[in-house]
Length: 73
Image (tube, rainbow, N blue to C red; front, side):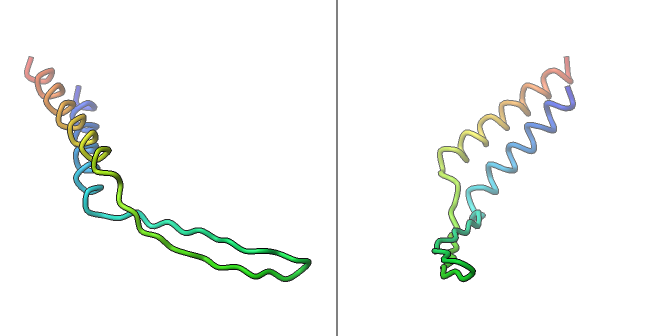
């Protein structure tokens, strides 16, 4: 059951980090005619929706609790 504790810890940390750290994303748009092309690249930094972060935190905490109960039994 140690694997359950480690997985819970990883999910908990990912949930907390996802609240504060934005994920970079870039998009390229343009046209290509023959051998030449004209385009623009835009970059966005978006955060994960808070609902997804909350789910990660709750599931991670639940897995930690379940894993520790299994280890102590």
